Image (cartoon, rainbow, N blue to C red; front, top):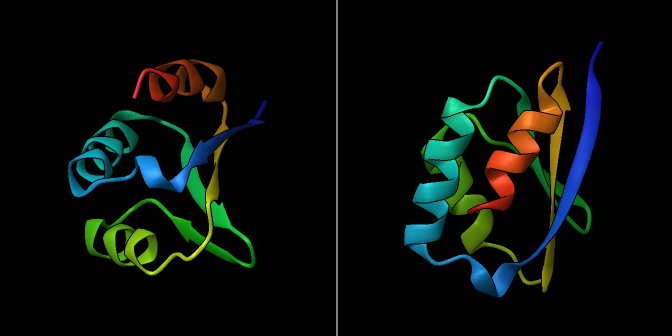
Length: 81
């Protein structure tokens, strides 16, 4: 059964290196990963889209949503990042 978890992350923590690290972790996850900020969202599946999404943000907080059958394990993995 699919489950959904979310993590709140300050956007100031996202340097280019952090974005690359997040992307790599998301590629190793079996769940679908989305990033939400105010009224915008981005599915983490292509690096250029992710980088441009994070760079264009003007808000302070992001929400990372993890959806899938193994979302709990993927959440633990992403919390380390």
